Image (cartoon, rainbow, N blue to C red):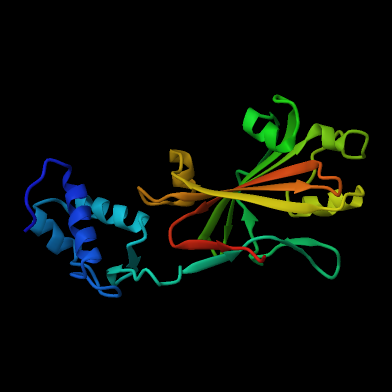
Length: 246
């Protein structure tokens, strides 16, 4: 039994298991003690044990396998899901996502006018507060198993003096076909960083407590380097990697 500490019980459990994983007491590929055993050992409830296990999952040390328990991950294990990133053009001229996943917007997808906040205005090289068309959706695939939050921004100034200056464009990737029709040659750059989700994002993506998300910004520019549109993705960060061709 580990020595008593003043920190919360769930963190004691996480520290105890983490130390055992790192020193080889719990080898890679083997199951951890069950929730019931850990609850008795630390004299806590099973939800407290789960909270400790969530910390280990967030740090990538363990993985939960449905119906089997929680297993120690090898540092050399591959993630359970790899998402190729990028945009490709099909033979018929359509732009599609490189991952090939067929995403479906849920019923709450909305198109609104928003004013550009400072950070996005800087990326898009527009004045802060410039109006933008914004398409916002929770997207699902594989019968809801895969989920992402997807937002598309198009500044009004990009559409000035075009047939689309009074109506919102479709969201990406359909958006790219329209921009190409307007005479733009498209280039894409993505910015990726992990961060902890906001409460509504964790709920929409069904993230367990303590699990981060991947925040991806995709900037679309034309042949002269001028920004045209910005996409924002929030992806579950649990056991997911994104890959890029170089």
